Image (cartoon, rainbow, N blue to C red; front, top):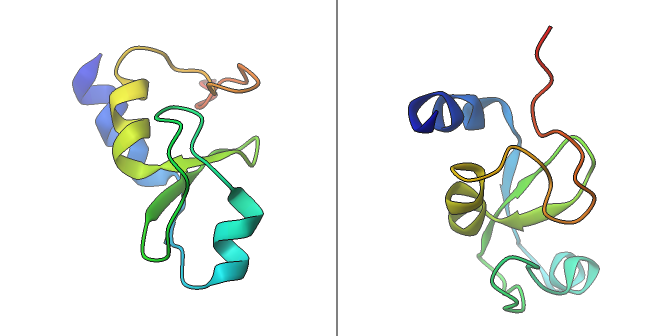
Length: 77
């Protein structure tokens, strides 16, 4: 599952927080409970929740659902 999960991460949008507005909009990562800072890399899920990229990589290896709403991160047909 680890290889599959990491490959699927390539389809999720990532971004770098560039300004104070971005940081205030997101507040803190619920996985590590740290506040976001300018320059942090975040990953956004289909449910629109966002997390530090490095935190979410650890999370996805254990669970394929959003840590906040439990929406499936990937939908397989």
